[in-house]
Length: 326
Image 1 (cartoon, rainbow, N blue to C red):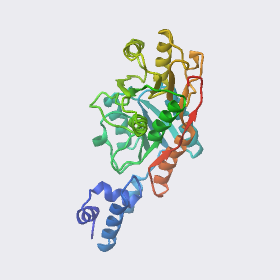
Image 2 (image 1 turned 180 degrees about the horizontal axis):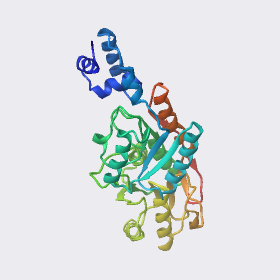
Image 3 (image 1 turned 135 degrees about the vertical axis):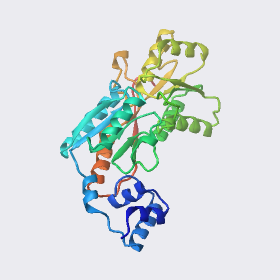
Image 4 (image 1 turned 120 degrees about the vertical axis):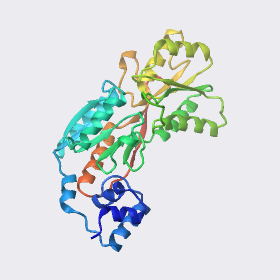
């Protein structure tokens, strides 16, 4: 009688990929899925339903691995994820990794040991080899091979920021912020596309001298001393796009301490939605991402896994929030 190893060998794929096809769990390329299904039919492989039911056994707990729960957008996102999951009978476990890969390994082990049903993963660390891809893992703002992900349209956000600053009459541009804050080797995430969209749109408009400051933010906050030095070195900058509202807040504060005015002398756009950092005395103009829509997309991916429906990557639309810094 044929077994799962026979299917994997004949199809030229791993056992985990065959398992994802059988259980309709995780992301599998269309052509790979079709090849595996063809082999299953050819060799008349019948899945072991007892083993399959054990794989799909549920305890109704989902773990959300976050790098920093004090980040206000992550807090908002967690709120809406919990609301959405609770409506479908699931409970949410918050796992604050503090950007430490050692803690992420411990939390990922909970899925391996069936202590949680699914994991929502938000990380900048190099953890791809640690993910069991035949199990329900959803990545936010990061692509891993054969793992479904949800992300805001970060590239379009960068383009939108560039267009807005151009429309406001800016001539000299700066991008500040780096998305590789993990304690392992720097990795590229979906957030990188904010910078790419910003730079590539300006280049299409004949502007090639954009100042890119890929400063490691650490806890997603830019240090005041660092910003002070930047503004002293680049005195002609009049349009800044920051990788987050937190970074934008630090930039705005230091610009104004230096004697310049926002937005009269320098216009600043952040990213997240302008809902935070109102202690500046003005609302930050920002590229907005919707925590509600992101939460719905993440939860639908998990539910589709257990309802044996197709699991797909999802890109969430962004919008511009007109604050008082442009």
